[in-house]
Image 1 (cartoon, rainbow, N blue to C red):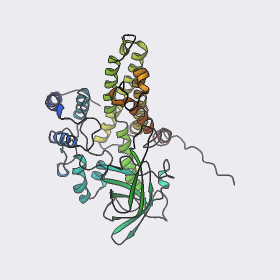
Image 2: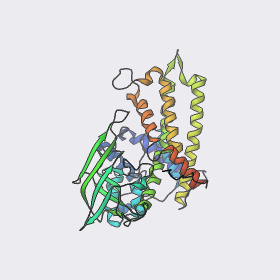
Image 3: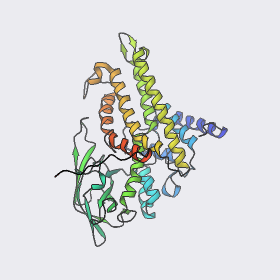
Image 4: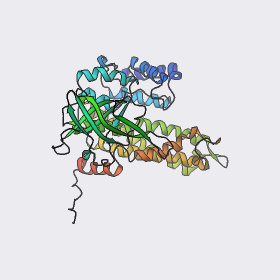
Length: 394
């Protein structure tokens, strides 16, 4: 990996800094996914080639050539400026549609998604199919020009605000469980679909459960062929896990924690000046930098069309655990204020760190638990033998 900056890349960094200095006041507030401000900001970033960089122009993207150093410069400058970075839309569905979707699906979905006009949710987990996702039981049969869907999904993030769902259903009941699944695109609010929020320990309801009762979706809304959904689903999970372990987000949060440690005091001393807290921050910074360079290694392989192997498999496990530990440092830095919730007048940052601490704990489970990730790393990346399975004694 060559990280030397050419004159071209130095000029690009200067260009990005100038842009941020002139336009950062137009950036949306954190957490605004679909507001007018967020959509306007995303459109501006695409126009300048800072978002949806490699998405072809015919689908609404910037149409830029992959460049690992420019991607690194963008992430670094947006992080230092404390400005929300651009994105390529939903980091799970857009790459999958570009790789496997029909031309009609690309034209219909990619543009609105990368502009933030169309939000997606993922219909994977079921009450009896979490870690063993391939055992899912939501079924769909063909009736005329439609798939007719019946079943239940759970832990569906953002289903109440999403416009579309990409969903796994069993269309080939007699096939082996990994070969009988199809990947469907379903508009939210389709008759026969019922979404109900689930209350979380954060107090929010970001997760939902969904019920399908004779829900009809055109047979054209399938990605790939019937029975090939497991292959499409794994491609989606690859991108999802990468997003959950995004090193740029981790670095941005780390800088926010440093600012917190500079403002919070114990007996008149700033926390950043207290060795025990400073040592924790330094250890955390070292791990975030390691995570950052591993992310660049994954990106290098992707640009070359290579499969990274182990570097990709560790991203989700490393990222989610590290984010939770970072939020834990912020909670400790707040002292007794770190246990406050709701509308306390002493709440710092609107309770962001309390929320992140609880949410990040959940993300160690979501998207594949830490234990499952370790099994994947051991078996697929390191070639270790699978855990023995013993026959049940009757």
